[in-house]
Length: 190
Image 1 (cartoon, rainbow, N blue to C red):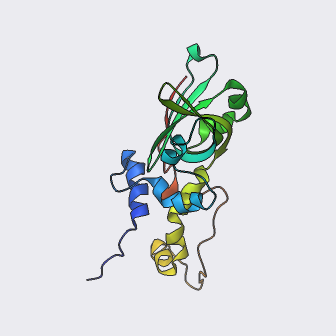
Image 2: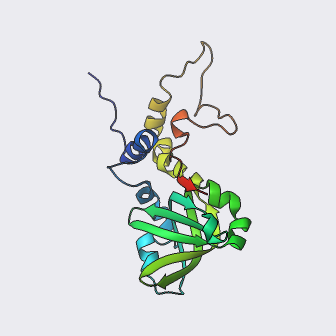
Image 3: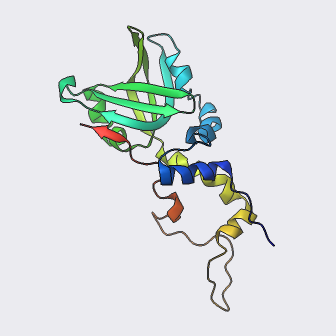
């Protein structure tokens, strides 16, 4: 009896998010934390704990985008990481400049200023960066392990007389089907 290798926790989390939109095992941002910490991107808990007026960089999974008609074009974004949530205020001028990022990013990296008033803390966005591609890091450890890579391609058919060396050729713009839409869409209100 041959046992399959144990699935890494990061893959469990990916599978959970793809199927149930959440995971009880961990948060995807935890697996990216070392990567972000090296770039001095704070956790949301660290960011919202800073004094009002401080410059800050943080990142998280986008939960909700709201652009109510009564807010004069201001967009409000709620994002979370493994430490908590951060509420962003995106003024109309910034929104127009970064519109595709604000509306499309699954993981959002924000540079801005902390604003605290009446015991409510927001981050006023100055620059927004789409970090959705960082989700690929969650699967890197599997791709870098030759044994796991071989197992991932175990169902591949190789024609007689043809040997495949290395990973299968990639088609431009296409990845493995399990990597499609790792993070579910946010809840957006306009």
